[in-house]
Image 1: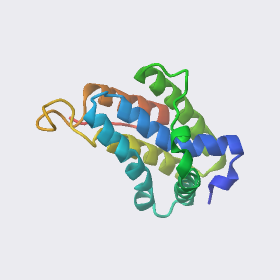
Image 2 (image 1 turned 60 degrees about the vertical axis):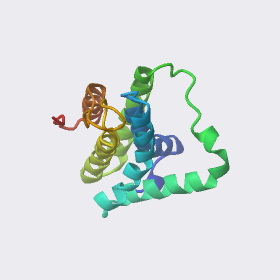
Image 3 (image 1 turned 180 degrees about the vertical axis):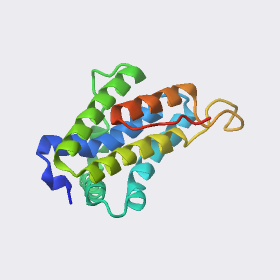
Image 4 (image 1 turned 60 degrees about the horizontal axis):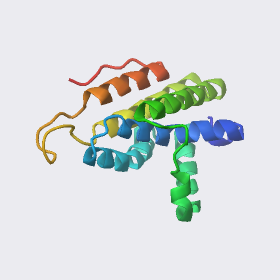
Length: 172
């Protein structure tokens, strides 16, 4: 059973920040204002939902616990924690940076965890991306009408699935 302590400090950073970073990149993929705000709020909920979705995963449980501890310890420095990378100039830059990080995180998990744990980690990341993308309707007026997943979100979900090496069927 793999936990966060089985990774080097650099790997710990990659593996534990991938869920949050992926969720934020997903939220930014559509750029719809109010929808982006709803999706950003969903990032934390989707990340923590991993406990219920994968109750027997010591890896996911330890990662969520580590994230919760980090947030509590840095409560007064939340602005610093959320400070964007200066190289990110657009949602596309963010997507590329995050997907590169996701690839590194998956490689670290693959090297240290069992095949089952690696599969759960990938499923968890995909679940986060889908939950964030589906948190708000896109288009329409004041949340009325529109579609659950915008075309940019569908494209980003496909890119996430490709980065994770999982099969993905886009929502209708």
